[in-house]
Image (cartoon, rainbow, N blue to C red; front, side, top):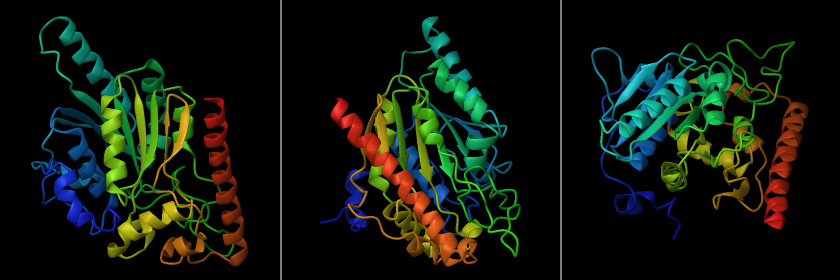
Length: 316
């Protein structure tokens, strides 16, 4: 029996029932990010401190004077979630050393969207990872600055139309390839890096639980569908997330102490990317030649990933 296809049956037995994101927030219908954050919090548990950058999640969850958060949560600037999280981790370490707080396993987490991670916050993230802080950073990647008006980021994929990279007679939309921040984090030689998607909830939860137990820095790049910015149906959040994985647009894998491993959810044969593109308005302008060019790029990047997996399997 497929656990993902029968999620309603298995979820009560496999997933923490405690909700650490309250209902009544302001998320758009079908928001993939709030679903991912909800699952992340279930995996982390109550003994968690979160530093959250300005962005969609901050706006929908903490408009004064209300909050949806049931764990200690700090709203910080767009660019410094990782810096604040590293400061919290250092402060807790100092208080423990002085005997002012119990030596408990409080997990410190930094989180941001693709803009706050891949663009504005990349310097702070790199510093926190390089210094070796005992923290988890999660990027919730919906592939544009959705909160401020669907502007392009370095996480916007090739060919997607946004308000600052619009498709038209002289432009195909976004003209550059998506920045691979997961691989940048691997280059920092940290203990754990993973990619995830809430369309595969148990895989995501397992990766968060693994990162929670690791002493030292860890990074998870979570792919989150945005119906508003992608111009797709709000009922397609889960199916589009799965298609991103099934086409290789966003492969699921983890890197533990330098060792690459494909997630079990990856198919043996990838589907064509046109299956993923066809229900999204941000791609409807693409010509067959442009789709082929993007398909070639996806194939190339996926082959590189497979080669890393095979090479390191042979090496170890």
